[in-house]
Length: 386
Ligand code: GMT
Image (cartoon, rainbow, N blue to C red):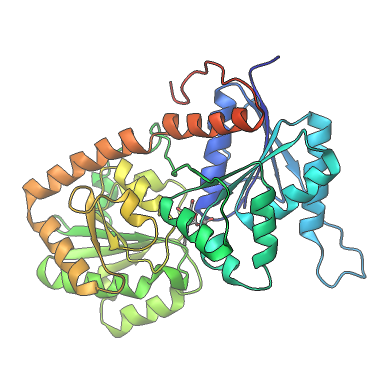
């Protein structure tokens, strides 16, 4: 029997950390020799260049006139089943419970038990959507019917059990970064475009949703800038952006803040920062803090969700209670004014990203889960980035 697998992957292709993780995982699995089939409504935005082991299958949604809302979920489930049959998929790995795990459950009814379903829970699929009575029972069903379920942090695993009253096994598979992309980049020239010599750079990267508490970023920055001349760079867009722009104007900080919009080359952008700010209300993991860590940039943020599992307080960054902007600002000031502390924390960031969240370790963990649900012996496989 061929030791390589045929793996279907479904994720949100155009936004968010879950889509990034799913796409990067697919690329690494393909490099290792597996055949990877992305099934989605558009090409995942991080897919990049051609690889012979990666194929993309587009979901067509029926727009028949009787539908008030075209049923994407049903079309996705049907496409999953079609691809699984035509390509003889071993595993369908779905990222984010709604609707992907539910669609995979339906696909399995069409294909049969031979198709194994792996569901990865990423965050608001549990912390927000599973609290919604109109979805709760459906999410519980999809999780219980998956052949394996993974969670990106222990905290998310705990919340899944609590909110959905689930007792089944859940595997812990942290997020990872591709170390060939995320490393400290040379950035003197681009940093000079935003900050004067001697000024520090604080950065926030997100989708500007209320859970990110972007307003706290501005408050922290205002207190830091009073003590340490700094610039604040915002990366990303989202619903709270206009409110934040208004707040900055009100506070008279316009000449100290830059909005970079959405950016593709996050490693290059993050490398300009001295500190990443992540004061979220909810954060199952905080992929952006890992991306920063791998570039040697510490995070100052909140004790929320899985952030403390990623950011080792006092070693690779500093964490304060949600909303405690004064304490976050004090941590930033300590970091920005103590060269010895800065270099120790930076070194710890690089080390921790490599040892705890390396793509080799996490990709191998997912492979082990695939072989386990298939009841096949794990073959010797080369490392992902080897
Ligand atoms: O749950 C979301 O907010 C969406 C999701 C996404 O697609 O970006 O983000 C979650 O998944 C990421 C990847 O696993 C995590 O790093 C983020 O922490 C998590 N977001 C939240 O929990 C708010």
